[in-house]
Length: 296
Image (cartoon, rainbow, N blue to C red):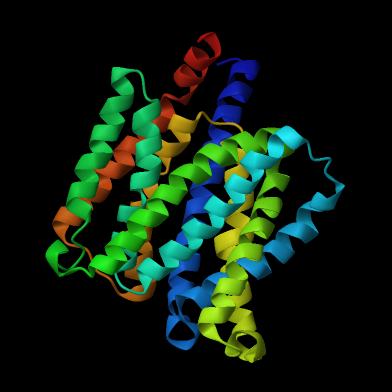
């Protein structure tokens, strides 16, 4: 392989690596966040995560230096609202159902993006593997019928906004790059911090002992992963990004095992294998997809 071809292949894999790091960080942060639910509840954790994450992102990207264009404001606001709603509903689901199941249900959003934007038979092979994996993954240690229906609805709602997050994040990121994450996080914080404060009460502001853990959650779940995701979003086709996100349920289940003592059966390991194969297949065909999209 020539040097130029090697560099091109490395450049194609870079957004994939960034996305994998982002997903791993988010799941570790979700496990840490769940430990605070008994203290301030899911809305309170969401509020602290967004406000602290926004502060960190602002210090890194200094978005006040950006020159905003009127045409980009609508996608930017839609991205921020989607980001906040996705976080809020996902944390609400975690207060009712296990992490692995919540992530699997939430993944219906990116899966829908991948399905509706796919055109080639090869794309549907990866999607079929994801569907097969999710069909096995859902009952983690419990029967699906025993799951709290409120938690299921929260997770599915988070999936809807996850899909919108992908669509609007790609559009908004084209104009402002990785700095888009800081602006989107600010929009989300402005909307959902007051909601968390109202639902949690004054303890959210005056319990200083929560700050170290909340800061860790903000870094793992917001500042670090959303920066990486925004870079990946601007370098990957929407359908490729959506299909690669199929690793999220697997990472969520593994995080549940490590941090929350949620164990998997052999069937669920088969499900993880299907999902990982779909992700690898999607990653290996990124170059072909990009060429086709440039010609279209």
